[in-house]
Length: 340
Image (tube, rainbow, N blue to C red):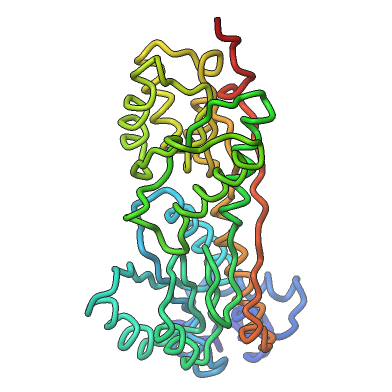
């Protein structure tokens, strides 16, 4: 079995230099680093994480807690986190966090408290005060994605503002008969995503002097949910809107499919806008506000590793990094057709 001494001998460097080159800690010239890495590959040497941990005090592992792994946004965030961690030589341990339950308690009281992590990322989880206290007591960097967490650096978009911008886009095109197809309020996501997007819609409509009575339809955050609600909203030509703001791109795509089945032309007869930047958006030429979940995941890793290298008190500050969504205009929105 190869050792660091074998690597150092083949690369003609000291053991300490070989260790720095492979761990990424401490200065080593790029030429020397390349020579050491090449030597390690030649003899099949793999750095032992346990040995590295003894030297650096780090496990090179990050714990990630997340409520869903089978929804597009969360899967994209995870991919962004994983890619960024792998680039820096870190592993990721994932915990699918259920709603309040004994299983959730065990994750905080046992796995996160007793397992060895260098840091923790909380994705789309509104933590209780007790859970926040438990995580702070770990004494490790913690970053949140999706909404504010007390004493924690968090990365998010402003859901109210994103919804307001989406609605204002339809208003700017001349639409006044607009409805919002959003999340089921009794099934509220953490950080009140459904309510906040409804609030942004209502704010934009009210500011434009328009009533929002009967302008909200609840849907699952899925393509089938959007299709089902689209058939309901568009099925009666007497109350058919000219514009729809969908709370996510999958709902919007479902609505577009429903419109096509009903013989409604998009955007000539109906304009549709969503929020997300889902891959389906380009396929269906959907106008959307992109929120770049992979970038949110990458930024969370950058924040964590920066604090590991330079511990600060920014946890106590509860800093919030808000990423502005980007309006991408495609062929699903245009001015309303004049009604005869």
